[in-house]
Image (tube, rainbow, N blue to C red; front, top):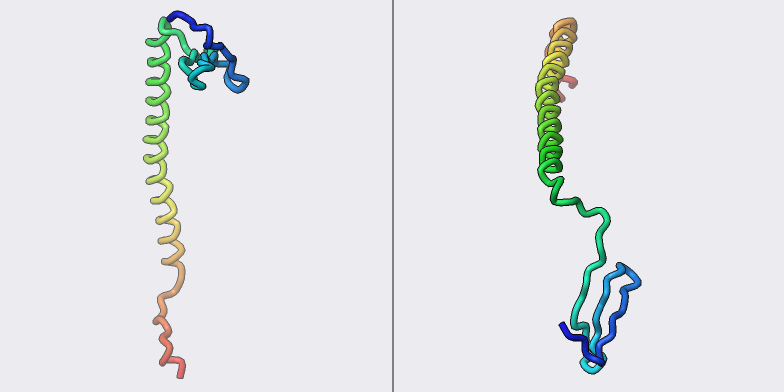
Amino acid sequence: MAKLTSERELPCPCCGAVLTVDLNLGRIVSHEAPPNPNRPELDHAAQILAEQAARRDAIFEQSVQNEKSKGDALSKRFEEALKEAKKEPVSKPLRGFDLD
């Protein structure tokens, strides 16, 4: 695009982008994004996707193991509570009008 004499290129102090401003219009006419050093290369896209899939699978397997052990822990707690309940003598529950 041909640059007019009324256009000025200004760097953004915040993000480093280059803004082209038309002084006659008083508007931004174009914007060039700053280069992103953290952007992954497309050559490594398959590797990145495979790593993310492996991470998701590992997290899922961990959650499955946690759910399996959660049932075991709950059943152990239930068995312990049942043993404690069997040790206590059976008594008739007190009601409010029985106390009179």
